[in-house]
Image (tube, rainbow, N blue to C red; front, side, top):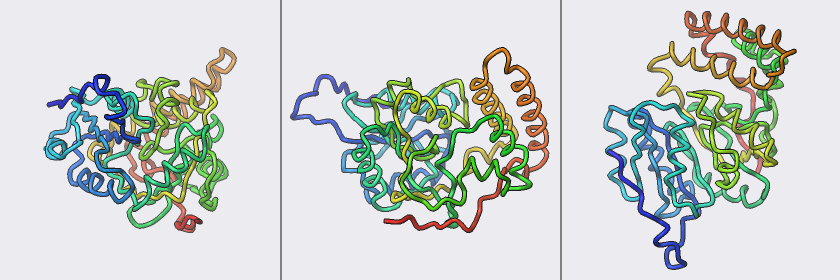
Length: 316
């Protein structure tokens, strides 16, 4: 059941100021992870009354219905699994139009104390930033490469085909910037697992491309923001833990296929000219081989292992 948000146009005077921030969570039977996320928001810097929208892709475990009973939490039912980007777009669209920034975050993320405050400060500090993202770690403290360069067909194929067996290959290292010291910097794209968006920038590029069901919608968004003159800024003083895998791990076969379809969609659209048809053919063949192998091997499906020698402490 969807709880509609109030009509904010009617109360748009100074006596009803808009919140400075809203949170959109895309859910799909997230279980207890959602409770952990919502519980961490106040300490992370979300003010009392911050609206939270649960853009739900068909949860059946009762977790989102329970969470929506809390004040300021709205359940927005998608009516089925529409994919990550489509649900996130819908969640943003129902918010008060005066809200200037939206945190789009996975339910399996736990934000560190002060993380939202740090991200908001970075958005203020960088007027051209369309998106800012935190330093993400795994549950055991390993830094996840959440601020990467935009993949070319060379780096994309090199990373996809060799990352699982040779994680230190030059294409994976260049793409993920694995061994960089975490410092505030611009990036080609930021992980959609936790992303603070400047709403005018997000709306200028029409949000996430709904053509991506899952995976690469954040890569595509980062590229389109850059083309529109906005920056993607990595802010490692804001930290979050991404446990990961709660949604994809339940049904890995279709997720493997979705990942490879999205990779082809993104890369082939970067090389769309007629004379680049051989490149697109090589890309399609390479990704088809990798997808077939990944369906049979969790090791290949898991991709390149994360390096464990990257410092997890961001400089302050």
